[in-house]
Length: 143
Image 1: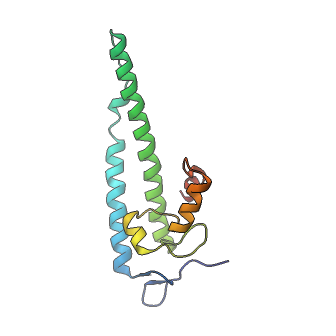
Image 2 (image 1 turned 90 degrees about the vertical axis):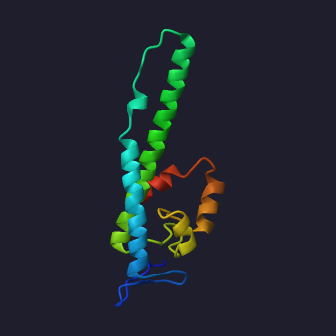
């Protein structure tokens, strides 16, 4: 079993594919904090979910569809917020940038594209082939 990258005396995380200095982890931390703030602000706008009665059947249908989309958006933003907070926890624990499946380092390029990534590209592709609709169990495990 592989172990997570360890902190070395200089305060950086060393691994085969990634060398995260305190500055790099600070950059990721700030990106994640900014994303968390944006998501919390977005989650604060729940007015679209209110149930409004419409006299016209077509208006009622349209309002129902808009409400359904607002609920879906709220759900997705909530899941993403959990992923971002879990990534911040991994940063605090020194486990950030380590794949949850194979425990290999997640390449910095992937983390720059998706800072809350929990899987390396290879494991993500295998997970998507195994479960094309999404890996909700894995996301819950990571959060």
